[in-house]
Image (cartoon, rainbow, N blue to C red; front, side, top):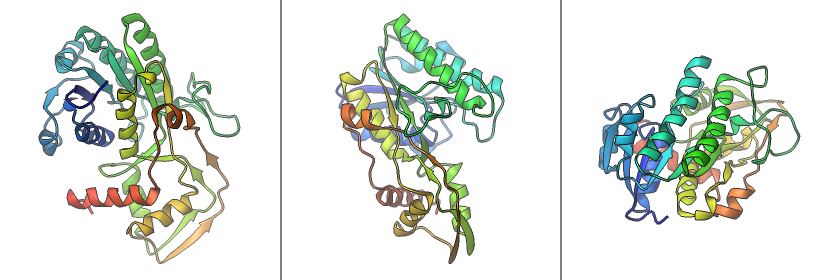
Length: 303
């Protein structure tokens, strides 16, 4: 679809990733409708969105009204595990909420859907980088948790409902997301690096991706008809955690005077070659992503 002049509804538009998605779509000329539980949470979003419409993920009728007139829906709202690990809450928000979004979109006459999933849907084990065909986690255990299991179940239901309701679905599976407006990973990292002396895991290699690059993947998925019916990992490999902190320093971030290396030989990687080949998606250099993060935070008065 052509985004310039199109109306796109985004759930969770006031959240961390949602704000990037809104900015990215608006930059391409889309008229963005934020469908959110609390429109007053981020007042400045009103200047970017065509409209902010109130709807809870539990209310199919409110969602349908929120999606009215849209040409596409980005299903982005979800419950994260940082402050809530209760299975029932994740099931209600992530699984039932996804079902409600897709049913409401169909009722509103919207066919094109991009659903934001996560690499947490993948079962543990197996060597190398996991691709989109890796098996999903199916139950809680030492390799499963409420969030991952609920997101796996949500994506399975999304594909089933897309077939049932005749929806043109794409799913995106980001890894750990960083960027401005994040209230989870970034504050922890900033506090760690603000210490005069700290220890960092020298060998730890975690897949991380900038929120702005995830928003770019959302836009590319909407623009390319070839993305319909496909799932994509959206993941970067910024090197080791030590190298990520080097990029943090190069971007102007505060770092300790003394850093002690902790030997942590662990790697978790995901294959994003499908997104590169089919969407033309490329993550930007980590130092550039961090510079943009710091600039956005400074503009918002958060640094």
